[in-house]
Image (cartoon, rainbow, N blue to C red; front, side, top):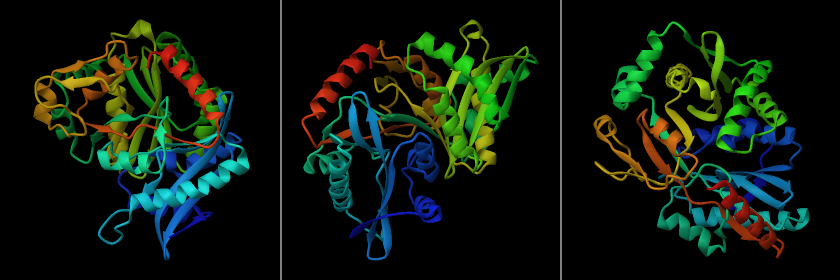
Length: 370
């Protein structure tokens, strides 16, 4: 096996057609977004003879807490009967290259947030190579996903009763309107609602420039849209979705507190699901959820798909009431779907400076209540 930089977009994107476990954080356009952010990136491919069997988008992160190399939701590796590739070997080859770059770029550690199922074998792969669990997560490590390849009727039947009821109530309300846009100027309408939500839930917002750069990177390929939920003409709910490789991703959002009893959010997601189906998407990724919940009536949904009957009859209990995503988690789960639990973010230490970063991140995590 050997590792090479990939310079052609088609080679990169075509590789992902055969990959099931993936997110847009390893897409070509996410790399373009990083470039707009003035970040240095590398797109590596691991080849077995002439066959591309693994890829990793790598970004150099320079922050107050330290400089490091970051692989978001990667690497992605082919594994089927044609290419029974060893994840261990691919990751080992990638790590060897990243250690060289880390020395050149004066990075104190390498951080990988893999989109790999959290099981003993995958955890062991990282441990055997000398990785340790990172003090914080960088992206969602427990996600909620919905199979939308079925009919609209089946999707509605698979929802919890309350969710389905509120969607229908919103559809009947003439004062509620859902509109979509791929005009970057409409981000100016998104920002006020987004900022109020951040203030209410006490999370750190992405800068306006960050959002605009992300929109620009994905919009050229028609892979991003803003949805606005209006009540009596006023925008009270907003969401940004990324559509990539037949998957729809719910990424940024916001809503106004004073209209919390108006079921606009339910209809907004239903319209987004229908739009995703029109675009050929088969999976609707709600992104992150609280890791602290169990189904007290049917099954523990850890990495398990719940059928419509189970969703309707489930009684989910949040185990940690202080987690900031509790309410949002129950909202997302109401649409039906399944929980995907990923390996926690992994760090490979390059220099002793890492421990200062580690301390800083632990303090920040405690402050945010995560």
